[in-house]
Length: 554
Image 1 (cartoon, rainbow, N blue to C red):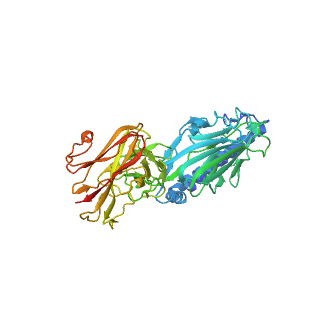
Image 2 (cartoon, rainbow, N blue to C red):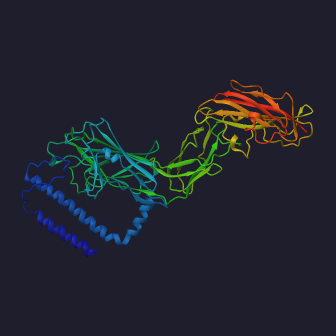
C-alpha cells in the first residue's frame, strides 16, 4: 500500500513539472457529434482546458488506485451491503437488456420481459412531433457518459436547433418491481468555452410511481458538471466528452414502483437555449424473485339464471378452452376444462395475467366477462376464483332447427290432496340426462325427475313434457307421442297442450294395443299400456310449450 501511494505521488510530481513548461498551441478535441464545437479565444484558455482535463485524469488514477488497493479486503462486504440495500432477501438482480434502436418509435416498440415482468418505454412531447430528434434519440452500443453501451440517448431539438419544448421518457413495468441498483442518468451538463455562442443547459426531473402513488427519488451527482436539487438535476459546468462520467447523476428509488418518468427540458439559467441537447440513460437491473409455484383457475359453469355466479344446480361445462396471456397479451398457455368444468394453469412466475375463455359452442352466450385479470404477487399464490358463466342462447338465435324435450313430474295427489314431502315448484336437473343442462330460464321448467315418497294405489300423478324449439327456422308438422307408464292408467280428459303452432290438433289418448299410425316412429316402445299423442303443427323457432296429462297408480 505504501509503495503504491509513493508511485502515485511521484507520478503527480512529474506531471506537475511537465505542466510548468510553456504550453503548445493545440486543438481542443470535440465532445461529441451532438454538440456544436467552437475553439476558445486564446492559448491561455486552451492551456487551462488541458490542465482541467489532466486534473480529471489525476483524480481517476487516484480513485482507481484506491479501489484496487481496497477491493481485496472489503469486496465481499460491499456485495452483501448492495444486495441488502436494494434486492430483498430471496431475490436476485436481472439486467434489462434492451437492444439498439433508432428513434422513439423503435424504442417504444421494444417489449421486454425480465423474469416474468413486462417492460416497455413510451415518450410524450409538450409539442407533439416537434421536440424529440428521432435520429439522435436512440439506443446504441457506443460509450456514453463514460459507460459502455448499449445506452439510451435522449435528444430534444431537431437538427441542432433549440428545442421548442420538453419531452418525457416513461419506463413502464407490468407489475411493481424494486430496482436492483440506482438508475444512472448520463451526460447532464451545459455549454462551455467550446460552445461559444451556442447556449444550452440540460435539466432532468426524475419521478417514480407505484400505481398512482408517488415514490421518493434521491439524486446524487457523480461528477462535476451537475447540480442536484430534490429530484431535479441541472447542468452547471462546461460539457464533458462522451467517454467521461463528469455529467452523470444517480437516482435511487427505494421500494416498489411500476413507472419511472424522466422529464427532459431546456434549462434557462444561462440564457435562452440555442441548440439541441442530449442526455442518456444507462442500462439498469431489477430484482427478480425465484420461480413461483403459483396457479390460476376455477370453473366454467352453466349459469342457468344468468346472474354471473355459480350456484347449486348449475353444473360445470366440459371441454371448454381457456387461454392464459401475460401482461403483453402474449399467449402463455392454454387448457380445457375437465368433465366437471374445472381448469387450472400452474407453475407460473409472478406477474399480471389475463385468462380468456372461448365460447363452448354457438348455443352459449356469456353471463360474465370472457376475459378476466389474475395478478400473482406472492410466491406459491393460488388464484382459484377466476370462473366464467354461460347460458344457452335465446332459442332461435342460430344453428340447425332442433327441439329440446324435458319430462317432469309436476304434481302428485292422494285423495284429492297434494302428497306431502315433495315440492314441484323448482327446477331440478336430471343427473342422468344432459338434455336439461344449460337451459335458458330453467325456472320455466319446474318439476322433479321422480317422486321421493312412495306412491299408493289410486294416487294421481301429473306428467308435463316441456318442449323448446331452437334454430334458425320453424319446425313444421311437429308430432308428439309419450307412452303411458306401466303400472298406471290414463286419466280421461286430462290432456293439456300449450305453445302449439298453426295447424295443431287436439291431443288424444291411444288405447293399449291400438295402432299408433303416424306416431309409431316417434314413440319409443310398444303401445301395450296406451299413449298420449298430439300434432303440434308448425311451431315457430324459439317457441316454448308443453303437453301435460295425468295417470292413476294401479
